[in-house]
Image (cartoon, rainbow, N blue to C red):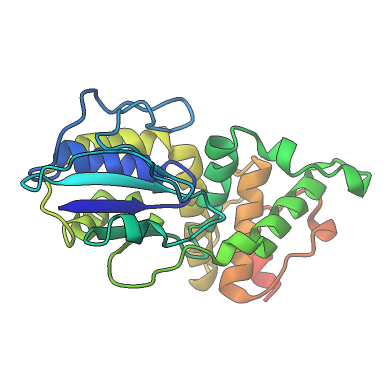
Length: 264
């Protein structure tokens, strides 16, 4: 059986490929081990099957019909073409998707990992003639709110894994086990979660803050000092309540969720 891992940028596809080839029942195993780079990538693990890259697969590869294989479908985050299904007509397709709530993780990993760049370089405030924290916070918020890719990579059928599923081992294992028989991979998941904590912790903290607002409880926001993390709080607030924080009014950031709740 061939399993096509169809994914957006951000390192999610290579990690899922590593889990399948190392722990999936009857999969052809890679030669190396799964390790994570400083930015959370796992590209060092060799792929058993050549990657299908940008609608192109010119390889002569003989599949053993008695074995399972994982094939990476890498068309880039801008291209959700299904042309690969002509090359692998009988494969099981596992599409990695994301929602509005996990979009900040994908957006940041897209810049840091796939583009090998930084948000400071990709989202400058030069044209605004001001480079204060509040202006960068607004720029990042607008990027999260308005970018065309926010609404991309949505499920098309039952064979999908949301990026959110990866945040919790039990959810990830349960979801993946619907498609393929797989052994326990908790240890390698913990390594992945730790290596990618800078991306995931941000949205989990934002979610906690929103729950405090809904429950009319106070959550300290002064502890959040990173401007990107602050922008994600604003973005989550806009998602949950449909209200945009007036950026200039809070140029020095916000003390607690009480101030956000007052905007409602």
